[in-house]
Amino acid sequence: MLDLEAIERIKQLKARYFRYLDTKDLAALQTVFCEDGSVDFQSASYQIQLSGWPALEEFFAGAFNEQQYGMHNAHHPEIEVDGDAATGLWYLHDIFIHEGAKVMLQGSALYEDKYVKRGDDWLIQHSGYVRLLEFSAPLPPDWHVNCRPIGVQTPRPARG
Image (cartoon, rainbow, N blue to C red; front, side):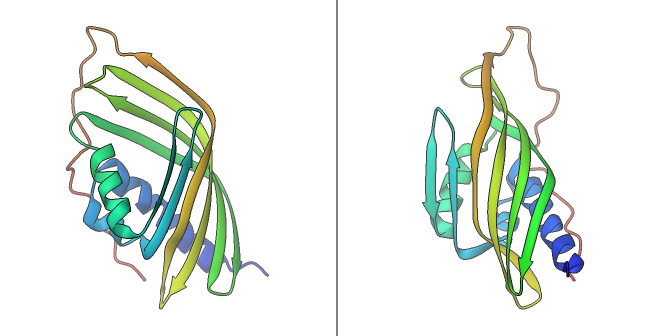
């Protein structure tokens, strides 16, 4: 039988992950990971493997700033729950802007996550993706940004 409450809580967890990521809310981002959480991001142009919040925080702080930011949309979740553990497969579409290098990257990936339940909360134990599509293009000379998501205070709905 499906644990629909756990599945919904995991969907909301992943939504918060992307919102905190795109707004570079590192304090909030820490709340979605286990203390020993890990990531493995793979692309034709990079492979990033990190473990533990200090390493994750350093990476996210450097990857997202006033000159580097993005938009992440995940959809089509396939979540399986087994007691206090779960796995999730998500389809990602993202756009990443690097103003300093005057480049925009866009692509898709498959995220594979592992989750654990701690008390009443689900947390990300491991998150990783493999790129399916990735392309980049120079930003046009007349391109400009009207607003940046970095530093936006994000509303935090009550857990529970």
